[in-house]
Image (cartoon, rainbow, N blue to C red; front, side, top):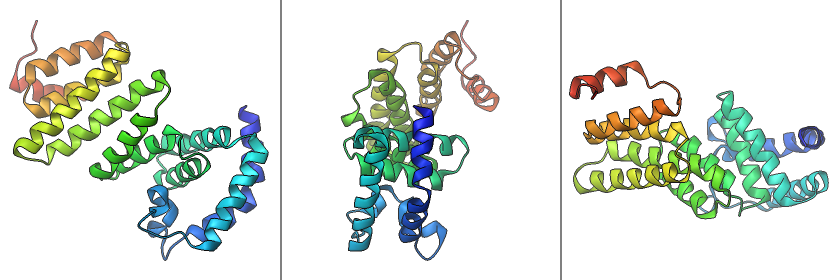
Length: 236
């Protein structure tokens, strides 16, 4: 499968360059293909790009057999660029994945994660909620819910009053769903611990720290643990 994807993507090299040049704006930072959904519907899609989209879809299907398979292949490519820290190229691949199959939950998940890293929490939540709605893979949904909980928590940190409480409640609900689906996924416990610290629930934060450690999650940042220790010594 990996070799098939590689051969198919290679076959698109010339077409891909043509498409990327068509998507480009005045500067690389303003590229339309670096915006989720190519900025649609706010940014109308010109006819020449609609034609390029159709050509891209046709050749992708010829290479991988179906729009669904091609969408997953382009999502996999996007994930590789995320791992390298190249969010702009990743976003272009997520857009192509979405173009191939708008009902695939994966590109919306990608949009949400990139938007969260860009500090755009409102947009991040919108796409992650859409992904949650479409997700049909219980195994992957565990991590998706964890990302959504983190997005709500990040948004809550800049909110006040009842809005802050509402957003933290949504964060807790998604972390709870994630850990209920798979209690062994340590990253959800880890993120939940940091969210609870921001909520002022220090006892709860220590409880989640313990859960994360039991699942051999990636160690929590020492500054976080020191700050939590200052608020409440670690229970025995």
